[in-house]
Length: 403
Image (cartoon, rainbow, N blue to C red; front, side, top):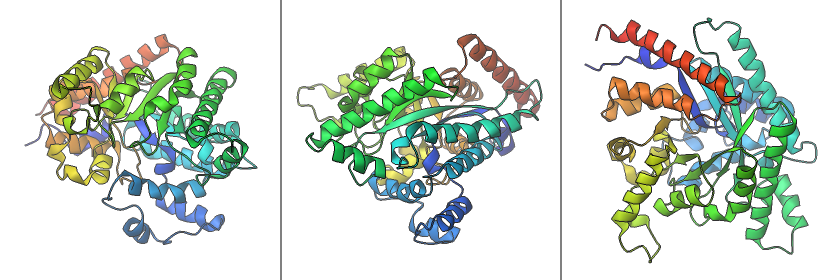
């Protein structure tokens, strides 16, 4: 008999620090908005879309990412962005998530009518409205619901990615593709810092997303240097489709505070640098570096199982080695729609398949709050985390005293 129940998993306070706005729409909303904006979908039923687009498994990460063409297509107006953000907040809270950090790439949504600030404000408006409504009914002894926004730049992009990128590449036609990608990334970084400093929009961090293989993190050093010098938090998609060297670049070249996925952290066969003769030692040193600095890994189990068929079984996921090496991890959805998941499902998947004790689970969940990029000043964050711990312990007494 398990020491936990599904009801306990659902009720305990949770974070989702790695959730993509454009990968977390409700399917009925996607269908309604597509009809409204005359966007052609492969199907206009939930069953059809799950069969053709949002599938149980994918050949690789690039196939997984194809569904975003449809979700982004319906997100190029303010009302749609606001609605999707509002619904995501409620969907999260309704399964016990008390804090989310929503990430997306505004440049994928920009057009002649929508600029960067308008898009991020629309998302913030939706999240803020939901938060304020939710917190009216949260008991005083429970942690309130809150959110942050993480701005993403694209590891790789070209003129076909969006109306913005088409215009941007045309304006820089004498630059190489790599130079233009770097410029677009730096522009996103500057916009993120501007919004953080000059508005009340809850921008809390910066990220690079998209196809990892062949698009190294150090192409974005200028962006992250600017972010770093302006005191904005940093996370990096790394180790999702490439190996330990990608994670090394994220934490050394980009000063990452957290790592998105980190799936292939322990994979010696993916090390390509011929100067690294002792691959085992390289990984041991990298893992120690990550552990010493409490660089948190945003683990997305369902997403990884879908995009990396080679894993085959959940027991083969590197989460086991992360736990054995006492790394700081937090469980995330990645994309609630594309991966058909929730944080509660991710937690149950982990608890059902890995040796996680009561004490470990509490530490993992509390550390999710501690390693969040919380928008308010640090003393307020400490108060919030204390309230989370008190509420968690109350639920422990309620649900686990009988175990």
